[in-house]
Length: 99
Image (cartoon, rainbow, N blue to C red; front, side, top):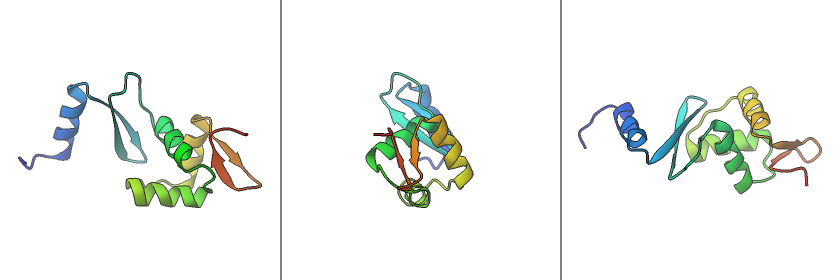
C-alpha cells in the first residue's frame, strides 16, 4: 500500500477498463466486467431485485448498513423512478415489477 488518496486507486481501476463506475448519493460504486454503462439506477435496481418488498425506510437503512450509502428519501424516490422500480403503496414496498 502506497497510501495514496482513494481517487488515485479509483482512477486506476477505471482506466484499466476493468470496471464501470457510478456515483450514488456521494458514494462511488464499481461494477467489474460490465460491457455497458453502470448508473445509480442500475445499482438500485439490482439491490431491489435481491431485496424485493423493502419499504422506503428499510431500503434507506439497507443502503447505509450494507453499502455505506447515506441516501435521503427524496433522492431514493427519484433514483427508483429513473430505475423503473414499482412502489406498492398498499404493501409499502419496492419491487422490480408490478406483478
